[in-house]
Each structure stands twice: as structure tokens, then as C-alpha cells.
Length: 424
Image: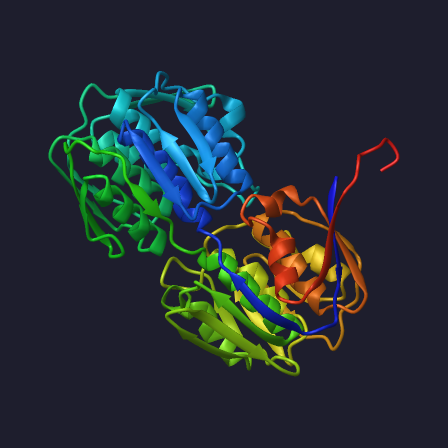
């Protein structure tokens, strides 16, 4: 059993380099299948979800190995088109492999994806879009059976700007004949990063980052060396840690242009946030101010992945902040654990009202999901006394080494690995 012991109540100070983006590297790893060659993915974060993606690639016959901070993937030996149920259940974004396998092999088989329990994440936008490109998709007992003798470029309209569906369609479109135009596409920076990677491999993708993405299919892709963008959610997490605990930190490599919704909220809370080409600095003194309301929305709106950590950073603010979660219906699972630390939070449906308290106190808490776990660490830094955070496997899915990073920022934090016994 892994546990973090955080002794809070002290301001942060220091500098940390931001890891590569989890939400960018996973579709890039799926995209390597299209190259049938060797790709060097630089600045690749060592995450549980990356390990899960590597296991999928290896199960399909591909080779993947670490060389320092780069992951070298060779998909020339791909010899299978089916992903086992066990591998699919390890992460929510595993369905992103569907479009790439279908484009290369003409068929694919996989089950529904797993990962954090944030409520339903239907993949009907994925399957409807792939059908529009010519795929025949049937579901039997929770397993998707996909076949496409030929994919053909078409205009595809997404009723919601789904990041995963946009990425899956981009990958499938690279293997289609003709041009695919995705209308209503997601605009997240990670979509742009995937497009840049595909273009570095010889694809022709335009419009990424806007609501219309165009892919000219039928081009032979090749390997390349590509550097993954910095993780904007990891950066948001550490900014919110500083907001909660106070202090003065610098996040090297972080890019504020991808975080304006978060930095705007932190400035309204009373933090001094500045940035340049090297990264983002954040200085906070005294108690924060409430920020009125925060409503999650697709990019460029406030990111749902940063909702929990901002909430944790404002637990000791003056006044009340109203959070409205519009993306996932079950993303307040961390609230009960935050209450153990003394937080005053009321939840009604998709709305949570945080009334700031003067002090928080350490307690034993358990991660409920990836970002909820990061929120517990954020709150623990602002709490008096020691907090024990359990179920770290959730945090390890998206943070390369949160103990290392928080320690670099001056936190009093220790990770302990203990053997689970019948008495625990």
C-alpha cells in the first residue's frame, strides 16, 4: 500500500519543471500505430496510464522501450488487432486505439474502456463518426467488433466537442481515402499537439485548435522524434497548491496561454501570477478571496480536470465560491474526503458551494479518482498537522512523481510503501 504523509501549514517556495502532458501523450502513443515504423516520444511522462498504453502496444506486437525521458516505440511488428478486456479496463482513454488500429488493420476488437469512475462516458460519438467513415461496428456483450475494408473521407459533425472522439476520428481519417472534415471538433491544446505529431510523421492535418479539423487521408506516414507539450493540468495543480498553502513558486515549462481560465480564477482569488517564455510564477500571501463562480466547460473554458484542485486551493478563502460541473456528472467524489480536513462544502446535483474556513486540519483521506487525489494533496498542504493520503494509484495515473514535485516546491511530504496485511 502506498501512502503520502503531508505535513501542511507552511508556505511553498521553489521551482519545478512540468512533466509532459498525460492527455497529449496517450493519443500520440495510439497514433504511432499509423506509422508502421519507429517513433521517439520525447518528454514522455512516466505514468500508470502510459504504462497501460505501452502494454496495449506490446500486446499488439509492437516494441516499446524507455531511453531516459524518451519512449521509443516501433510499431512495424504489429500483428494483432484485438485489445483484451483487462487492458481496456486500465484507463478511460484506451478507446483512442480504436481509430488507429482500424485504419491500419481494417478491423479492430476491444471492450468498453475503464479508468476513473466519473460517471458515464459514452463512446457513441466515436462509433458514429467511424461509421460515417465507412466502418461497420457491432457490439456483442460489451465488446466492440469493428471492420472496414476501406475507410473513406467524409464530413463528420460532432454534436458535442468530445476530445476523444475528435482524436479517434483524426487517427482513422489518416488511413481513409480522401479528405475528412470534422465539424464541432474539440479545441483543446492536446488536439493541436496530436496534429503536430501526425504532421511530423507525414500527415496533412489542418485546423486543429479550432472547431473544424481537416485531414487529408491516404498519405504514407513515417516515424519521427517528437517532444510532447507540457502538462497544463499538472501546472494548474501546483498553482492551486500555492494558492492554498501560500508562498512563491515557479513552474518551468508551463505555458499560461493554455491556462488562462485557471490563472484568471487565481488572480481573482488574490494570487500574483506572472508568466514568460520560461514558465509561470505564482506568489500568494495571506488568505485567498472567493472567486464568485466557476463553471467547467470545454476549452477554452475552465477545464473540468482543474475543478477539484481549484476547489481545494480555495477551502480557506474568504467568502463563498460556487462551482458548476458541466462535463462529468460524478466529479464531486472528492468532496467527502475534503470535509474530513474541515472543509465546508455543500453539493446539490452539479453545483458545489465552497464556504471558506479559517483553518483546516490533517486527517486520513483516500483518493477517489485522479484529480480528486491531487485535490487532497492540495488541501493537505494548507492544513495544520499531518495528512495521510491513501490509494495513490489514482494519482500515479496522471502525475509522474507528485511527491518529488511538491518536495521541490518546499512541501514537507513523504511517500511510504507498506505491505498490505489482513489487519489493514
